[in-house]
Image 1 (cartoon, rainbow, N blue to C red):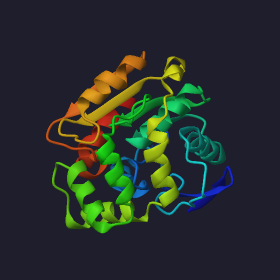
Image 2: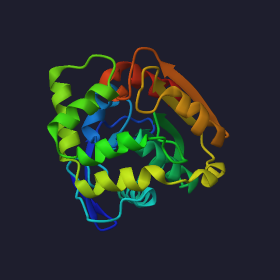
Image 3: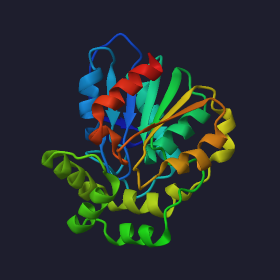
Image 4: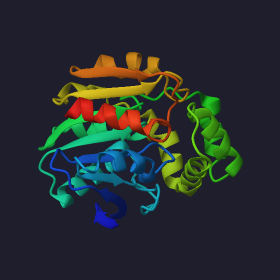
Length: 256
């Protein structure tokens, strides 16, 4: 289902009518809301689950401009207002972890907690220059998407999941792709982190090669005053695809 906010039509997946806190799911760079479907299947009995395709990703509209972290934060808050969510938890992965931190720093009414899966840090993300260039020149190429898949997964996934990850990579709009690599990932919003007044729960795979555990201990946790940090053995960067059962249990444990 698509909803218009901030002049952009955004695709949203909705599941569950649970009485517990609504969960708003945000995906990784080059991904889509589809990555959360298995996790939402496991949680829908207890929670209302809403997963958003960020602008330029998945089935959402891809404007030529407007891909700054705050633009995406505006979109998320616009949809939350449109859905009339009074109390909710943001569950965000990688790129959208930075977006979720920007949202939380605004202290929006109703936000109860953040659950961040391998989040991009509030300071510039440490992407090596050669890797950044490979990603920029590889946009839209299946061979590049396959290499990325190999780099960001550790636990085995099915062939169907592999194809979905590749498809999401290939359908990411070039304006969104370039904007994150050239600007969004380099943004520094660290001075706002002191304004976050809700608990932040971080989880990362021990074999994450995109944003290793030490990125969280060096570049994320020092800026947060109320955060927990957990790791998952033998898992990579795409925890919603690699270990959905463990991740769903983690979310339930942290938010109740």
